[in-house]
Image 1 (cartoon, each protein chain N blue to C red):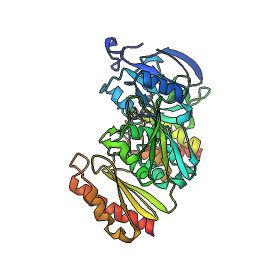
Image 2: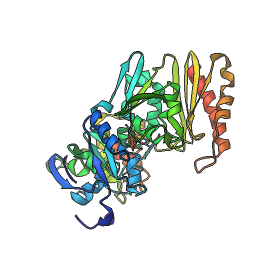
Image 3: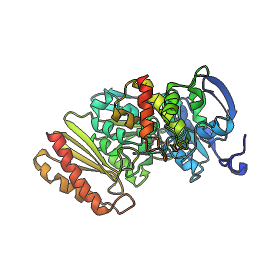
Image 4: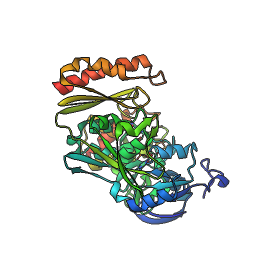
Length: 275
Length: 151
Ligand SMILES: Cc1cc2nc3c(=O)[nH]c(=O)nc-3n(C[C@H](O)[C@H](O)[C@H](O)COP(=O)(O)OP(=O)(O)OC[C@H]3O[C@@H](n4cnc5c(N)ncnc54)[C@H](O)[C@@H]3O)c2cc1C
Ligand code: FES
Ligand code: FES
């Protein structure tokens, strides 16, 4: 090995173990044995932590070789998204026609390199208030399937995300994927940021009009949040969305701006979906 | 730990630290310094490589995740001693100042043109949105992409 400014002192290089199971069953066995193992899928969140030495998990559970977590399918009127589904895959038809808001949101995530690796399961694992996959999944009534050796359980997405960067997963569980209702009416996703690419949203909004109206916002409270309305009272929706938000002032924007932007986005999204 | 993978068409076996990135392994273990390290957080694209035919930031792939997979770096684009047409176009248009971002742009452009032979202006901007250049202001880089696409 050549000397390099990147070299880390060898004494600190021993702490991590990587496990690469080839099936979901093997992954669950390992997770039960090593509950402190950190799953890594696309690595677009986990690797940043590792590269900057913010965390040194004793064990990394590499899920890339687990076939069962990949891809998507139709199941009894719902769409099944494997936890390993990438943003690039979510942007491709026919999936993008079944879940257009998720496809639009996916297209705003990072740049092509990030979208080729980053996954829906990873976005749920990170559970960031700014996670862009979350508002589109909320308006699609997403149900998160968690699996462990003990069995499986299904948790509605709004109950799965319990706080900023906190979710309802137990130590021995993995996210298998989510069931989402395909859109029958119209839906859209909008995100505010200083560029069209490579931005963490200042605020984001997904809206689905299909019988009822469902709006979900991100980056305007501790967790992405769903607001429902009937088609009769849509005119009050922009205000109700702004009221449901509890934004903060931070480097990306002020609370006041975020509330304002949510009103504007909700109005625009309604125009788009009701046109 | 030991990993085996294909790099630029050749099988390689190497010893890596479990927590290191593919970028580190390529540069420091395999002596392939073409992929650059500028941010180590996926923001700049200077470490772009193809992993199983997909454009990725090698700084965000765990080296151990590349076990058994196929990696092509900027060093692997030239064929039989001839530069890839994207490399030629970058040289001809002078799309380079300090050159630090160039390998990443070259790999991302080669990926774009392999998928879309005649990209529109919007398509090329979107395809290169994950790559940052601090010097050129992008005009010559986009000229290079158009030139490569025209050949
Ligand atoms: C440059 C850059 C730009 C970005 N831009 C955006 C953006 O615009 N919008 C956005 O929302 N995000 C963005 N992100 C964040 C990140 O890309 C997303 O959160 C992505 O969805 C993470 O997926 P991943 O597969 O890479 O996750 P990983 O990093 O592999 O994992 C993320 C978390 O989820 C856990 N996890 C992963 N899979 C599972 C599973 N199956 N079961 C249980 N836990 C699991 C991991 O343990 C970890 O805690 C960006 C990141 C970078 C580096
Ligand atoms: S070094 Fe990998 S994206 Fe900047
Ligand atoms: S030429 Fe210097 S960063 Fe692009």
